Image (tube, rainbow, N blue to C red; front, side):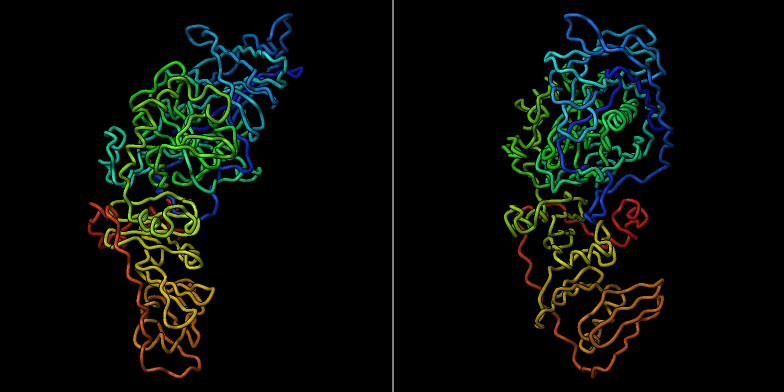
Amino acid sequence: MFAGGKLVLLVASAGLILSGCQSPAKSTSSPDAPSASAAPQAPQAPESSPPDPQETTSRDIAVPAAVKSGSNMVAELAPTKTRSFKLVGVTWDKFDNDEHVTVEVRVRKDDGWTAWEPLEVDEDGGEAKRGGTEPWWTDSADQVSARVTTASGATPTGVKVVTVDPAAGDTPAGTVAPAFYSTSQQSSVIAAADGTPGFTPQPPIIMRTSWGAKAPIGCGEDGYNVYGTTTLGVNLHHTAGSNSYSKSQSASIVRGIQTFHQNGRGWCDIAYNFLVDKYGQIFEGRAGGINRPVRGSDSGLNSVNELTMGVSLMGNLDKVQPSTAMKDATVKLVGWRVGTFYLIPVKGGLNIGGVWLQRISGHRNVVSTACPGKYGYAWLNAKGGLRDRVSNYVSQYRSAIKSAAWRLDGLKQTVTGPVEAGEVGSATWRQTAFTKYDFFWRSSFATAYYVTGTARAKHRQFGGQGAYAGKLGFPTQNMTATSTPGFSVQKFERGAIYQVDAFSYALWDDIYKTYNTGANAANLGKPTSSIVESGSDKTATFDNGTITQTGTNPPVVKLTGAPAKEAPPTEPTPSPAPSPSAGDVGAESADVTGTAAAFPVLWLRRSGMISA
């Protein structure tokens, strides 16, 4: 069991102080706590006992401003003893000349003082409450010294050194978000050769509850959105921290970075959407859902934060090449997001907020910074590097949902709206949420079907996400008009949604079957409500009566004044399903009989797939 980070704050008086935390972002909204949106979520790891966060401790040490004639030094912290810490950064009051600031720190460890370590200044576009550097993972240290210089003559005020002790503890076992395939396949996703899969699988991801994340602080309440409208690209970073860490220390580093970002820089959460260590471990970053366009604070420009996925490689890639495991994991992570958001072709330019970027770009392409380091940036652009590998990895992405969306608007998203939750599922089921349409597919279907308009809202109301998809299940046809004006029907695996003029009503299970038995539908007329549940009792109302079910007893039909009819209404004839394009189903035609019923409901509830 591990706990939240302990923060030690070294504060300087006389306007020049030393303390730290991290971040970038120009913005109009913040991403943290997930909204109540019902877009489908990728399954989350079951929450085994979350860590008990320790109270963050701090202490202030007054530091005089540097007074050296003819020197550019503006603040200097003499060697100062403090409580043991493992991560350090420097922050200051926000001002407009961050690019002219140079920061160096050194710390005392068991074997003596380190050399001066330059800290990369992290330009912020507006969201952070304080300017500052990237944090440096020092491992165990108990003294710190710092110096801040500026070449422009503009002097930062309120300079602080921030030290963080993220507490002890490794990532516990069983904490990886499941990829949607078998356990054996999941464990080999990272190490496997890139290949050209027909569906880019979700790589194993260590979730926030597993690495000991603290709750977001006011995300969505500070003028910044929790979510962007969609993902258009990927912005690559490095943490600019230590390259000397063990695999078991990675979770502690991520906890330390989050504490620095929140307590030092004033962000609502960790800035990045994902972090990848040199061992190939992928960590979920900012809260909100791993397959959602969660807005980060990583780029320095709000529009880029909202429309790209921020991935940070853990280490200083100005000093070392990214490891093979880090590269492989990053390709799988970026390829998964690019593929499931249908961002193909990968190569090509985008104009985001007035900045011209490649689909996969580096932090330095957005603002003036060395990030993601000279070796990280070289790998991004190299022949056979990140951009080339991801382009090849997703080149054969095939999906019945992608093809069905293409038939509506050529994936221009003028009809469906942008993707708001990337394609999730397995070899036997999948779904994608666009802003106006939800698409569903099972391997037993000839094609993918969609739900839109008021029917979509009703389907979501009754838990229409995940493999089981709530009360109704997956649609088995698109909305189909009947011969009665203003009356349409969409059938699902366990019921139907009836659209009556501008309203939609849902019926399922026994009440749905009773309504469609004999002359009941003709006698009752059109639905005027969805099923209303009260404990184990259920009732639905119609133009001419009700159907009521008490517990598991057979439903009872009660007519209210309308004459009985002898013949049942003509069943609506579904429009013929379009033939799937080549590759829509491919090799994923496994028998799905019984899959929905057997899906573990408790797991779905915990994962957010269903609400009850």
